[in-house]
Length: 112
Length: 112
Image (cartoon, rainbow over the protein chains, first blue to last red):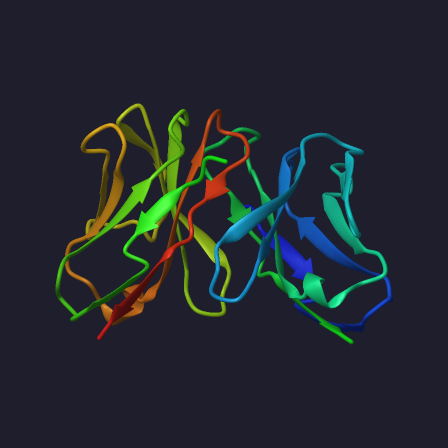
């Protein structure tokens, strides 16, 4: 059974700082997704990573995938308050299967 | 931009009652999903649906749950006899090709 571990689960950081969220998963997969969720809201798709070595950037966020290490990272550069949210990684266990397996999420708080 | 819609946004019901949660997936999408998120916890897969039949379901999706696409646009989740532990946010998602899934805003179900 696929397990997806995120760390840290809670992250409080100052504006302007950099940090990385890690997502490890237990079985082979080459499809990984990052979602953002604001309190009481739905899941907003941030990044789709479909192959080993994939790197995607949008604004202050950059995501990468290392399928050999079964690891994805979400790097935050020069954080701003608007990035405060919960970030989930989700893994497709069979590469085009019917479901996503989510990590527990990382609740990010960016303090002014 | 096309989006997944869900109704109602909040449903309150008594234990033992039947509820139907409704979703309208993105119009050209072919794969449909239900997930749930108990407050403060991770998102869990319930069921996927393709070509008018269930293609995969989780252990959570027992005989009390059913899904239907009654009219070619709506996609419904029925819980026959609700329990207290069914209280959660229920998200519908759709995808065009078993790739990236797009999530609706969710229905908050409260069972009293």
